[in-house]
Image (cartoon, rainbow over all chains, first blue to last red; front, side, top):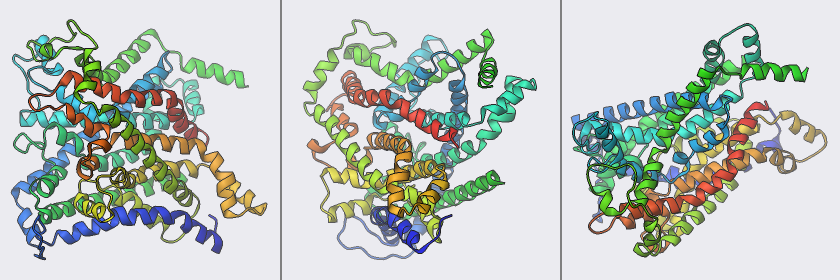
Length: 294
Length: 290
């Protein structure tokens, strides 16, 4: 766009503070994590380099199960966020009275401190006294109390639902903005040609908000993969490991058991996956902007 | 011409009665999902403990009262400080993020030099690692810098993880500002810095406000893991960690915990209520203008 010697220096001067900050607070600790993954670091004073031993140790069937579980957990959570977000954005875009109030009412799960929302879900999932179990019994859908966080299967889904609940508002507002940026002329032209509301949604809204959906699902994928607070507060990875994702597994090893070296090795595996996601994200966004220009 | 346009638009937006019913039904289901924990939480805050721990489940409180809202201050006397700390930490974090991100986002939006795409990738990629992965080295770093058990132990690492989404949002916004403005300023002999300061910044202000709000929300919402690990002083604790004080030695005082949660989130909710016009408006206005 703009090219000259002075603007080259200016551009990098603008970037310098942020780059420096990230180098110290993220890049250096990241490097440290890699270094520690080849050591037997623990609470003991002496730390030795042990080569690939930590990696040999962690690659077993349990760890592969954790990886698969993390992917399943992330996939379902992101998919639900995108579906519910699209649903919500289309509804909130409808020109009905009260829509401004509805938009405000969408936001609380997003803006409230995560821990508070999670506490509330923890109470709702309570089998003896919680609302969900209570109402299910009241309407005769289940016979006895359902302790959602006490069984592996239900705990898996319960943590997903809470993660979706926290993620949906931002996705919805972002999608709403995407829908509203679609030129109105398109709808008018389609309407004049007699296209039904469904056809207009299917042929105009959905294709034109597709870039937003793809971008958001990639960003959401990374955030969800990193999700820690929800599972930690609700189940701490239990019962019997059924909600142990890679992040939880790493935290348990590193902070819980104080096996810093092994924890770091697990963290490195997470970093590798995240790097792959980021690469995929850049490829996709580059392709999107290329098609936009064409 | 303009009137004819609005007429068509009005007719497009005219719904049949069953369509209106379907929209409202959909919105009700959608909002019920998002708000039910708050509804239940509020009802819990009104119920006496004895009723909370009794079967069968009752949705509505019997003999409900706001008693928990006054007793919560006695159970955890430092609670007012937790709210103050949360606000202080979030505000300082937001200011630091803006100071770092506004220039960086402008650079990414306007200039295309070798290596910048890589740096942008680095920002987005590196900062996408959650704090949990970097906790051990960060702990050592905070200790070396002498920041453990201070406000900055919670602010400094938090800022790093707020940077990527802020850069991304603001860069997207600034890319929509026409390059012709830069060219015109250049023709008039304005320096790069003057153009940034006097031409771009004022136009980008709605976007900056949106980024400030979302960053503040993020900072306010995410004070958990760093506060839990890097600070052990009660007087510096932010709200989410402070709430654990209601997890007593025997039982959780659920009604007071919920009451305290509502008192703690009320200020944030009020701010959002007044600023939401900027939030939705800013995002959408930026998108429509192009």
